[in-house]
Image (cartoon, rainbow, N blue to C red):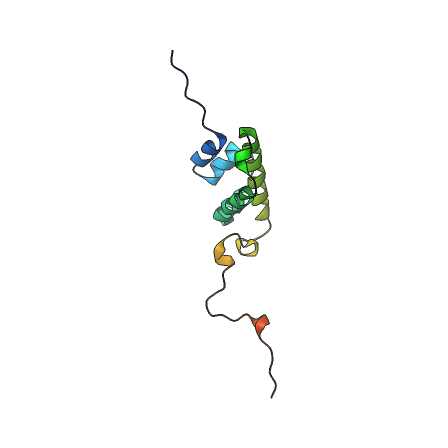
Length: 111
């Protein structure tokens, strides 16, 4: 008799998904398509940042699913009423821009 193949872990199932919409559907979460159209990469990046705060190795599959669900829900909420630039989810928004001097660093000098 042949044994059935073991079911992939929750992390393996999450990694196998190919789109943000698939991730929301898999985790049974509603989402605003306009938010994903505007900030898809940022939502996914923020979800990853939230998951980095959790030790997933210490959780069983149900715990991983709950953590992923919570992280995705929070990440989506971050961009519902905000912009990617305001949220600074990507490194490009936190790096100094070339040799630009910020205006707040300037002082008026009177001679």
